[in-house]
Length: 107
Image (tube, rainbow, N blue to C red; front, side):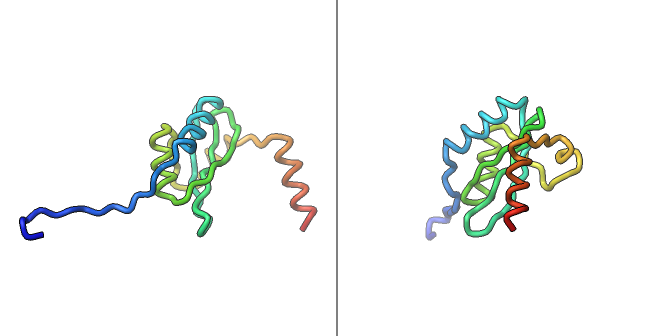
């Protein structure tokens, strides 16, 4: 620009308030939460949540930057990868085990 000022353009996708509320709700119901963000291609990414009580769940976001921002706003710590300690805290429900068994037998 001729006057010496410049503008910075950002391409931030909006963070859905429902996503933030869902993350906060999960953390509140399960004694806090940690998250691992997994890229799943064009669909965006999956936020896998592990509660302080071992329960786990997931949410989807359109992009990893949106997922990170939503977690930050919800007060959920994002881990960079699956670490043994985090995996050891997960306590799958009996319904989940049954669901996983059905998928394995269907193949």
